[in-house]
Image (cartoon, rainbow, N blue to C red; front, side):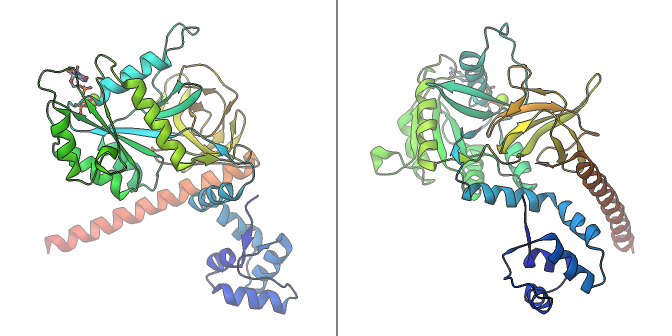
Length: 375
Ligand code: GTP
Ligand code: MG
């Protein structure tokens, strides 16, 4: 349960937390700024300021980012934490082989023979190696990565930087390094196209060292793997190295709490209505769960995994496709599971309304700006 403390209450009531604590003290409630308050205490304080607490507490629930962050923090303290699969994004210069690598991974490690080998695109998929899972985001490239980050979503744990052995470091290689570094995401270097004539991995390594990506052989701590996405050479080795890096990072999640996650992509399907591909980050998402997704709400109706198979639950780092939302959310939107559908609905509706109002205000501003520009 997400508790509200004097600090949160201060924010809602636009008062200093110290003032709230003092007020509580006068009302006979001993607390500090961080201690969770019970409902009675919250109502008492709110009433002191002439505010209907029900309404205001509700307003706090509509702060999805805050709920999401709190659950993310809470999971770090949880004693139910277990290891979770790493989430990997592949980046690199145009034509260096990102899509070929993603396709190879998908086909050699993902194709489910029982399901007739049909894999559907859900924006991410999981690869199994030696009974360990790795989640790959299926949209390679920098735009996807930075769009997510700009919207406050940081779902990537590891970046695999693909550099063609016959081409070397190019502008978008450097851009990818910059992106990963500013997001503080570790980079694994995959020197690709080792089968190509003119492949010169030594040269590429030397180039990359100028950007502070130093292999262990040279006293650094960046993992380098020479691969061929085309022939499959060393691709398993790359997966092993991703697992190794993930181990070092001690990626964990608490599968027992109420789920939070992030939308990877969403669309409107003719037959099924709004469909969202999402990544579960903490907790376990169940069919039937009431959810708020960005400014949308609903209940998880049908949940499908990366092999197009229906599932009842999704654990941390698992990508799934869901239906059951009232409208199409946006990529990078946060997903928060609620206790009941009624609250989810009113929060969702409130958020949609706020967003609408915001966009109206923005339009007015733009119009005014334009007006001044032409004067
Ligand atoms: P963009 O999406 O345009 O940025 O390119 P990309 O990085 O996804 O590259 P893509 O996978 O489309 O590969 C570009 C070309 O390189 C294709 O013709 C691939 O067949 C070829 N290619 C990819 N990997 C290898 C490899 O390991 N060896 C060789 N010889 N060719 C490769
Ligand atoms: Mg591509």
